[in-house]
Image (cartoon, rainbow, N blue to C red; front, top):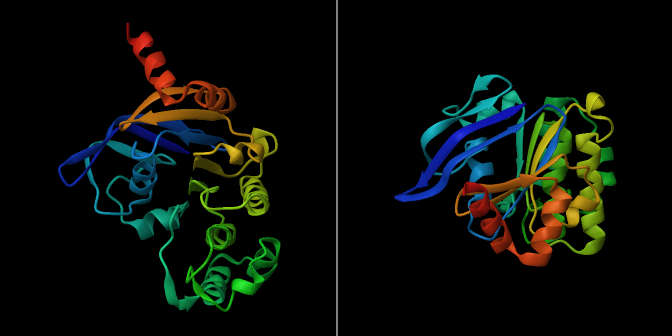
Length: 245
């Protein structure tokens, strides 16, 4: 589904990603962890084509096609979708208006999806206009559920969300990724988590730890999170250094 090959990315004069490589097969969900400012969100944004970011070297391959230089709208049409950690506020665009447009475009029943995500009372409000963290996450997921992209990029779905809404968000992601047997799955995902709560709802297949723009560890996501909880990200650095010796 997705291959990132030795991707290095700059923002201005600062190198944010340093030769990042990963592969997400069709039907798999991968988890990305790391301290704040390590480049996790930048990776998702550059895969989607967002922001003033310069790809210095490397490639992004989506379903066998090099999308490194494609504009964001073409990537979205190919089947890449992003739920951002902090979504922009668009008071002049109602959630209902956007949901209707997306529902017509992708032939999906947006009303039943809005009800399932407890978004009914948000429909007449401006998009993310004074939304709480949980409301913003549910509105973002509503848009993704309507579009049903083949590759989901989700940036910290637990950020600013209370425990009740984490369950709603987690179940929605589980539904969208259709997490049964791998052979029956149609969608893939790359999900950033800081708290690890989303692992209670996703059968994640692979985990990575990013520090200072590099992927320093990979393995079972639950095992990685358990080690991080015990020893912090410094343990991942020490592990990576040992492997290089």
